[in-house]
Structures are given as structure tokens and as C-alpha cells.
Length: 421
Image 1 (cartoon, rainbow, N blue to C red):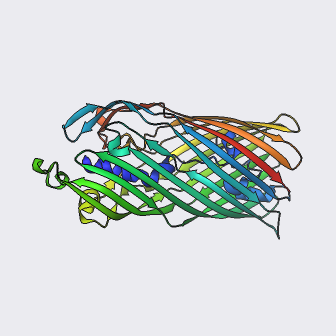
Image 2 (cartoon, helix red, strand yellow):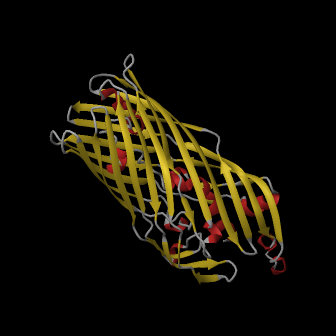
Image 3 (cartoon, rainbow, N blue to C red):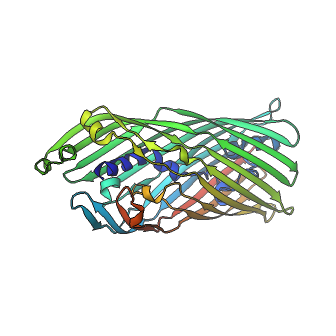
């Protein structure tokens, strides 16, 4: 149990931002709850579906935006198994609320010898979770993670109706974790990655001007987090001798772990149901089942003996279903509305305080105002409602949790500037 508590926290260092991935990276994608693949037709098409760049007017497009992210307190009601008392202890508590600001940039070139080029700077994941009470601090006193992606791309029109696109993904992440359990351990970890490389592919088929079918794929990327760990470990963790309970062994060591950032497949259809209204349906499959186990490596032999054993994860592939509606209200004003259902990849037996994820309903809306023919401004809002998640005793949660999580929602507000030239 003690080892599981530490390993589950260390896992969050590399996967929290991915499990809570942020697919919405622009004003339009947020307003449409992510249902923005087949219908992507502005600068952010460079990120969401580069194949669509071939169908856009022969101009350059640019978007600069920022998303404010607010995470309210998560409430836990229940008990947690204590390795000291050997029984379940009352553990009801609330996490700290969190606030972040995530920048986004997208650009598309004019046509050049049949090719269009794009560039995106995105923050596809990386949030934070903090708790101040026992037993939550055993595994999640503080966690912070940042993920940044640079994604150059291109498109090529095979015909007036068919276009292909592809891109290179360059991802960097860093983070820190703090955990503590009196007499057993106190841990401070910092880690980051070198630039990790992947790719994305896109295909769009414009059956006729009012109907577009599209498929996109973002590759799996193995993230090797390398960093340092310092703190102390109780000798009792090795000997199990009560006489060693107050014997604390300090350490400072290098550590590393490799985990997959999963591949994602999206299938979408966009239909203009009138001259002013477009509807898009999207199905997204995220291949989390590639995350089967966690294996940390420590240079310090004592830390390796306590923390270095592989831990089974066995997450599940997930489905996300999205619908978005775009409506041209007037020559200058466009409004957008979106809804999605998003599954969590984490089985009940693996849920922990560092990652209390749950299935979610997503509601969104937004507007784009064309100030001139070349300059427009956008604003959009998304509410991610996490469904209450209960962990029963029979589940045998490997973090010793019995109870329920709720109120784990998220609010996203985006403001954007769009320019074409």
C-alpha cells in the first residue's frame, strides 16, 4: 500500500495533463466543444485538420488566442485505508481550486505549387491539483504539469474534392510533485523531457460544397521524463520492524520513467443544412490501453528498492462523441454551440487523489465578430461537467479509496484575435 501511494503520485507527473487532455485549442474549437474537424476552415485548421487548408481561400490566415482555465474545488466524501492503523479512516476533504492561462497560435500560408503550409503552438494538456489535508497529501500534496506542442503541417489537394494533410509534432513537458506521509516518506520531484517527436495525418473529402467527410490521426508519443527526487524514506518501509519507524533516510537522486502519450483517431462529418447553418458530428477514439504499466528507475539503491517496482495500470481506450453547430447570424456575427460526452480512461480500481477523473458532459458556446473583412475577434466558453464517481469497497481500489468524487468540473474562457491577408 505504501509503495502504491507513491507510485500513483509519480505517475501523475507524466499523465495528468494527458488524461485531462485539452483538445480545444482555439476560439472555434472551444465554442463547438471540440466538434471541429471536418468543418475546420480558419487558421486553426492547421492544428485540427490540415487537409482542409487546401479548400480554404488563397489567403494567409492567423489566429492568436488565450484560454483562461478555472478548476473549482473537487469534493471527496469517503474513507481511505491507512497503512499505519491498518483500517479505513475518515478522509472527506476538498482540493484547492486552480487557475491557468494557456496561449494558442495558428497560421496558414497561401497556396504554393499546390501546397499549403500551417503552424500551430498549442498547450494540449497540463493542469494542476493540490490538497492540504490527510490522507490526500500522501499522494497529491501538490502536482503541476505543463505540456507545450509545436505542430508545423502541410496539405496537398489530390483533386477538387480530396485533400491530404500531415504534420510533425514536437512536444515538451515539465512538472513537479510533492507528497508526504509522516514517518514513511516526504517527496519532492521535478522532471522534464527532451523534445519528443510524433506526427499527425489528415484526410478530407468534400463530397459537395455542403458536405465534408474527414479523418485525422495523432500519433502516440513516448515521453521519457527525467528529473530529480529528494526527501526521505522511512527505514520501516524496508524492514517492517516497528523499531525502525522513526529512522528516516534522506536521499537525493536522479529518476526517470517512460510512458505513452496515446494516439487519437477522429472521424467527422460537417453538413451545411442551410446557407447560414452548419452541423458537425465527430467521433474520437483515444488509445489509452497502451498504458499498461508504470516502471520508475532511481539511481539511489534505497529509493529503487522502495519505489522502483513496476506497477500495473491497464487503462482503457475511450470514446468521445461531439456535436457542434455554427450559425451565421448576420454578415458580421457568427455564433457557435457545442455538446460532447467524454469517457474517462481510468478504471475504478486505479482512481487516485492526484487524478480523480470521471466521465464528463461538455457544454459550450461562443461568437466571432468580423470587425473588418480581414480582422475579427472571438470569445467562447466551455463547461466540463464531471459526473459523480463512486468507488465501492468491492472494487479494491489500489490507492485504498472508498467513497465518491464530485464537483470536479472545469471552466474554459477563450478570447481570440483573427486576421487574414
